Length: 339
Image 1 (cartoon, rainbow, N blue to C red):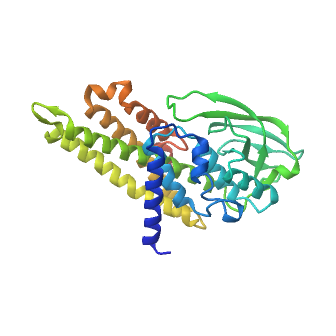
Image 2 (image 1 turned 120 degrees about the vertical axis):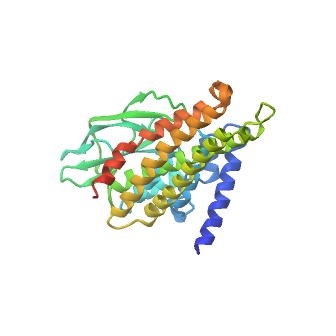
């Protein structure tokens, strides 16, 4: 397929997602399964669409645009990504098929301190794990007694809900205290576990880009219709400049996110260029989204501070995205270490 073909495919996928999320009803997990979004990266032989991360990124952006309270990040983006990075096995293929068919919801636990000792006992903890609560199974990234990276499949671990201001997402602390796991539940990685964290960071950046685009569009529309002193407030120079600044931030973020998505989707062998693209996209986009939503709140005037406007939902989500899977400062430190 040519780049144009992929662009048209993504446009169609984006339009379909916007239509589903824009309907006057609550979009729940069964709706997401029915739409086929959960199984986008699952191989066709296992009931999925056989697509790639670039297509998943489109959905992440649209979910951010709608500020949808759907457990897609941990239960689809990260879980399916981790399963695809494991060596082929019957249990791995069975989980992928169950996820794509909606028979099981799996949450990925990455970025923690889990270890698997020689007696096959899993110990460790991870904080701010997305969508762990309500998952049928957990897929835990750990280090075994030999120092190798493994994924451990468990049905239950100790979950402690972590309240956050963002009401559209649920995160939890996941703890294992020497739980014994069978050999069949320990799977080997074929790639680098660092790729999973980069994938998570880009997915969050896509979400922030979507919500920033939504707030820019809402603000421009409001400025065109809100009258003050007998004319639309969008005709005032100060409002024009503020909207222009929002547009610049969104445009730069869109370019950085596009490059990061392409880098992750291309599966670069050494990961160095991928890491730089991811760090730039995550640090800039998530910080810019907070600024854009904050400016939207200000330009909506008094109505922007009301509960009915809904802008507060986007502001809380943007603020949480900024710290999830690496703050802007953390990612910029990684960039500075390259020089």
